[in-house]
Length: 216
Length: 239
Image: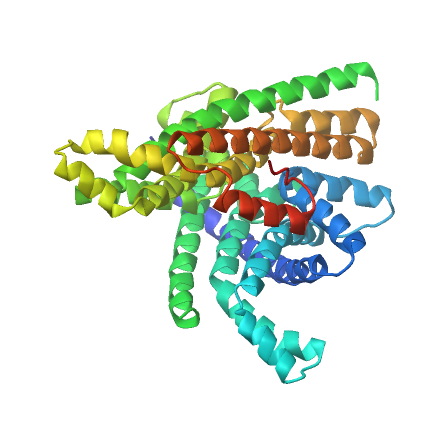
């Protein structure tokens, strides 16, 4: 096995650029998935089955099909329909949409875990519907689900390399570009592999600390 | 689409199914070995198993696939056939996730059961084989079902390496037809259909295993499924 530290040194500038793009995609994707997931959850509680049923079918479909194919779909089909976005925006949208179908389940569990007494108290205080949600239910529910949401952020981090296939130069994209230009595959791929392990390990430590503080 | 292109898609489905079966078998083996090792009485065995889990869960499946395809041949001289390289990468990665399921289910078995085994002077291996595993396995099935769906979605990644799976065939058809909406819709539907069949199969398996340890299959989990079916409206056929 040959290991060339010079190659690692040469790769580092590209690596930081890739890391930046990865973190960007991750942050935006997380925000989108948290928001969309909440929207799906609230729609699933709508009184009419004409709302619940389509939302249920679509989210189930998105959850059970590969993110990679969804990326291809959005990247190649949307321009055919006259909608053009940058590759990164498409990738963020795909990741956010895909993971919103997971976060919706997390939110639902969190909302169901709020004791019935809280609902009853809100009714007894004659709180309007909107205020019941924003001041009583959601603050308690979201507090409970932060650790679970955090796990999905880590999963999202591990799915960002897929953005490479739609030409986004995140970490894996940079590594592949570098390997093809310099014909050195071992070092860049190992560096980003280690970076992924390190980042997700640190994130899981952070999450455990957060869990201790929030869930008591 | 012409029939020639459909042949391409059918070949892709076959490759995807093959890869799914092989990597599911490898992942199951890895999850049981590593998961059981994490409940071993020796600290060093537990540490090694935990280390394996952290490393393989920490890295991305796609990075792992790149590593197996590009670094193993150059660095160690192991050139694998694409099918086995894909199986290895997916099996090891998803096996690490599975080992957590196995560990969780083993720890969830009532401690009194294990103590009963000790009182009857069973060896550790007998306790595992005759007492703990038969009770733990049925509890693992719903989680393994989810993991299997994730694995199915993961098999699409090998298309990046040029393996002719379903996703790869979709890309070929897109290049041939110069239009993408139709073929990608079909391919998404095919993946969804495979996932649906897998969910049904796993649910049947769970029922049989639960009946085997004298648990009523129609209690807790099916009530949860029922609720899920009511809220999602699909995929919740409950007996």
